Structures are given as C-alpha cells and as structure tokens.
Length: 123
Image: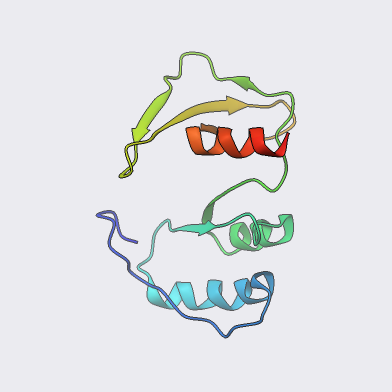
C-alpha cells in the first residue's frame, strides 16, 4: 500500500502451497512492482518464521507481523503513551510499546475485548 493506504501491489497465488514456500518469489516480484525506498512487508504469524524474516531483511525490506512466540520477561517502555484505537465495530484496541532484554525487534502489546474473551475460553 502507498502512504495514503491504497494498494500498490497485490497478487493471487496458486492454492495448496504452504505460504512459507511462496515468500521468496513474492519478494522478488515486489521489487519490480514498487518504487525504490523503504517498503514494509506485512505477514501473518503462519509465514513469519525466523528464516522468512531474515529473507525479508536480506532483501532490504522491513516487516510487520504477529509474533509466533509469546514474548516473556517484557516491560512497558517508559515515557511512551498507550494508544487506543476504535474499530469500525465500535471496539477499542489498546496498543502499548514493550521491550525485552532478549529481543531487539520493536514490539507492541495488543489488548482487545475480543482477544480477552478468546483467551478466557482457552483457559
């Protein structure tokens, strides 16, 4: 997507193929369909393996994804405000920056009523 939120590039892939096997080809195509400069690849947790994240970084891109592992021993970043977002369905999502001594990536703790209900059902 561009800075205004419009899709710049999208593709439909063949079915019944694991996402992790298609990422390399998608990254190659991305370079020819986007303008030079910093691009961000958005992934779901299913494709965000350590190997795939390294591939994205090696190609010069940044990434945004859901972590595949639960971050432990984290703390809230001092002097950073919590952000509240209201969804189209009138639900509030809370975003807070957190840090961990064992990780160098940028992390956000995401809290929402729906996520909390799901967590309680599993417990």
